[in-house]
Image 1 (cartoon, rainbow, N blue to C red):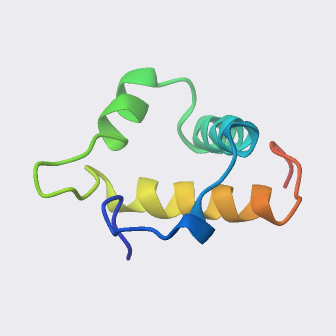
Image 2: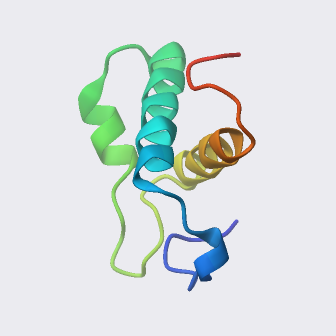
Length: 78
């Protein structure tokens, strides 16, 4: 698992539009699994003092959403 503070290179950067699309995809997919539990989502997406995510699975889900958007897959699609 990579962590949020892994010194990503400039090639790993996404545009603000891609970030927004990835965010909407991430939230949509979370809602499909966990319903509308906003407090759980907020807790799962926190960053610990060591730079790692509160929930490593949420970080992996985020990376998957970013990869989907970068690949041109529309958000909120299966």
